[in-house]
Image (cartoon, rainbow, N blue to C red; front, side, top):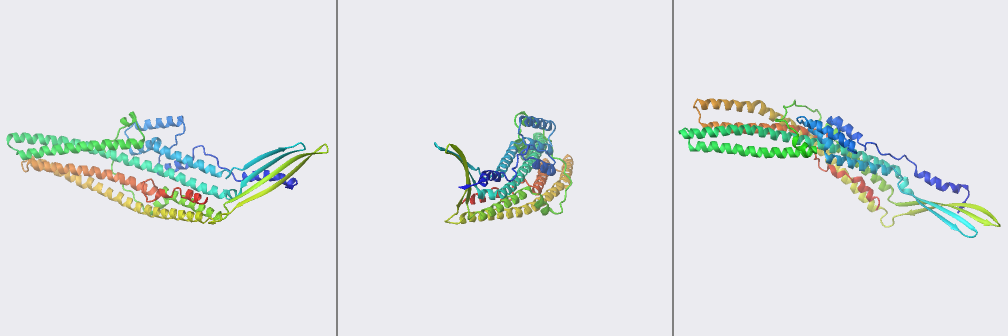
Length: 481
């Protein structure tokens, strides 16, 4: 026992030590402000986290207003960002990360407080003790910094999930509209094929067309009919895929209207430094870098604590009331006890080795992602430009020439310069070229989406992009061995 007034300050001092460092409070919006800001900057769209019935009603009204008009790609993306429940789950994951971050800013260990009372005929005493693990307390600021870095990475992962939802929805929109345009064209082609088949049969009745010509005309009609049936199936499947992306069901899924054709070909945009732009803006690369930083900090913490795994400080204060010669006297005393635990068998080597390997694993995957980001940006830009050129070739050369050939063939047929079989061949070639033109245009718009995703993230590729997640946690686990 250490008597004296100084001993009475032991327990208050320990309690005050535990309160050092400000704790972080929960944000009112669940840390959605950085997500909403980045989405608005890159996509020009709004995104919200639904946390109440009022939010649900507000989102429902906005979705209804967007679906009341013929759908555009931008409107479809906005509906998905408001209504996609998978995206809401990603925002819930961000909320979980925020809870983990706030928990990391709290005192690292709950102090063990005990109170003992002793009562005899001549003596009444109270003993109070408070135990704190000093290693955890000493490195508390570093753990808070690690948690802050990990939480910032989680915010970028939420942004990446938002970009991915937007890109997937935009692709699904162009797939659905392209499929619908193909159905419309093949429907008109089927009418032409039907008229050609009927005409050939009538010519056959007069002896002007052979049985072979009649069979070829009928086969042409049957083939176009089969292509139309397949196109309708593809259009139905593409519409359902878009419906899922937008999170629609019931009457909303059945009633939204799609355009009958793809938009006009936009002006080609150029990017001077594609690779540098992607490396600067890709949110998955930013998140991976933050996760690697957190893992590196955890590695340093593991090395710092490898030789001393447990260091407990216990403060004890005792107050006795002793009765002597009819008088009661008060006596106080205090003591400090230090408990040190040192690993004997491996001196923390297993934890250190695991931490090093975990860090190197994360570092190698980060480098892989950086390499892939550059390659994806180059590939996406080339594809974007090439599909634009291909679409323009169909639009400016192939289709006008096919229309001219079709017109001339009809004139030649009317002038009895060619027979019906030549006319059918021309019609088949015209159909094939028009279908290819529709597909080329659809491919361009999808390539445009892929190019945007290659610059900002959300493309759903990139090597080991997701493998860095949890690296810091793995190192933290290693530190406990």
